[in-house]
Image 1: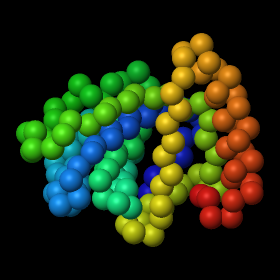
Image 2: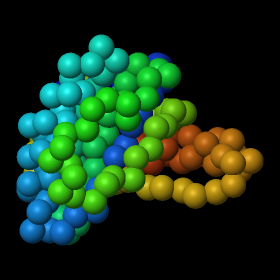
Image 3: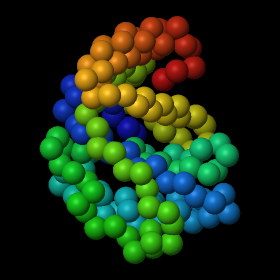
Length: 146
């Protein structure tokens, strides 16, 4: 069960892997069997989930950590050397809204939407303000959105 941190007391890690569809399952198995065990043994770990794109060419992990901890300093499974290195990001949560405080992520039953906005650093504050309004409107007008 993933708990949405409404207090913004967690830092978010996103690792985006590009993978040949023939190797997607092997990558997911490595993440689940090796990477998550390293992460969950860390005192700073809060939660994590693993996602696969519908076309199977991308896999990403979404993880939450105690603030100011950079999860990328933890050991990386040597099996990861068989895959392209991920595009890793450490993010602060500025806005979140969910229909429930806890979201049950069940294999194959939900689709995750991930959007990246690239901009100059001086525009980030305005983007966060606009996105916060849009998140509120989206959650209230999209019955399928959790």
